Length: 119
Image (cartoon, rainbow, N blue to C red; front, side, top):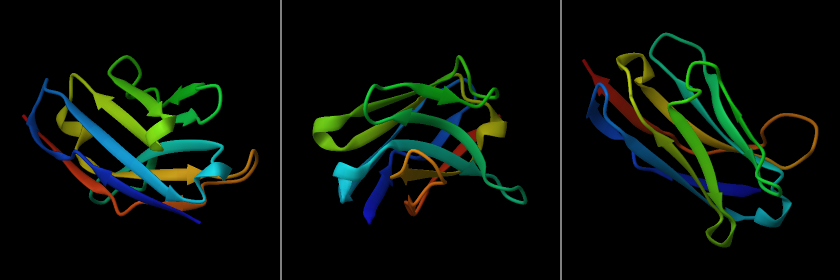
């Protein structure tokens, strides 16, 4: 099992920036991919971005391409989500998740951090 702790959420005006961090601990040697998801009030959780722990390949939802950047710092077992040009529709709870296998879904999740973008 991997424990995940997110930080960096907050309130920002539209057009502003935030950087989220997610620190992993526990069985980190098994990590294949780490991702960010978000859930807005009344909506289902949706994929935002992901990065392969080895190799660094990145994946993005169309809604955030060109505005968000996911990166990792392996030595610190930490993944980041730099969010620029934020829009009110980016308002959500953002969750970090880890996938341990090449196939299958995400295995462990963080507690989430609130991001609120005011217009």
